[in-house]
Length: 221
Ligand code: GRF
Image 1 (cartoon, rainbow, N blue to C red):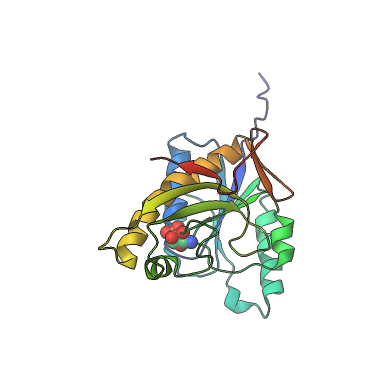
Image 2 (cartoon, protein in one colour):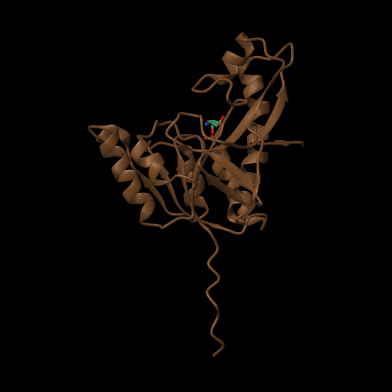
């Protein structure tokens, strides 16, 4: 019998806390053959995260590591590392994950953990980014995909999408337009990583060996 050469396609573990629309965008990109990878596990820190149902519907294994059950961030992160490393992923994707990691975890996944943040980093790190953007009366807002480091929302940026702020914008309206862009740029960044084109060394992202600008690449719809 012809011995199939084992062509290992990249394994991904996704961490969620909520609705999982970014998880869904990634699942769709894989299902459509845009990204050659597998999602081997979806982990949520909240048992009622809707994203868990999205994964289960697609036959993807899920696990809840509930942060409320751990006495410290360190203990929670240790359990997360154990659950993630059990799958030996090439890439860990944070998709609406709302916990702050200890440096032990971010160091452990340095160069192979991505996050999406709903702002044009380094502007508006943290939460409530859309309200803060409107309060600051910026003309442009958007979303950023970055490598995760020990600095919250501070890791080197891979790609950004700009979203113009409109006069009649409310946080909800603005968030909805930003979310559409998130679903465009996250699969692109993940595809580049899975193709071995993205690299992070000493906090400098390179794409095909070329350093990326500080703001990453600008996505044009
Ligand atoms: C998105 O705005 C994401 O950027 C933020 O959480 C929101 C919901 O994400 N981190 P999802 O629908 O759970 O992927």
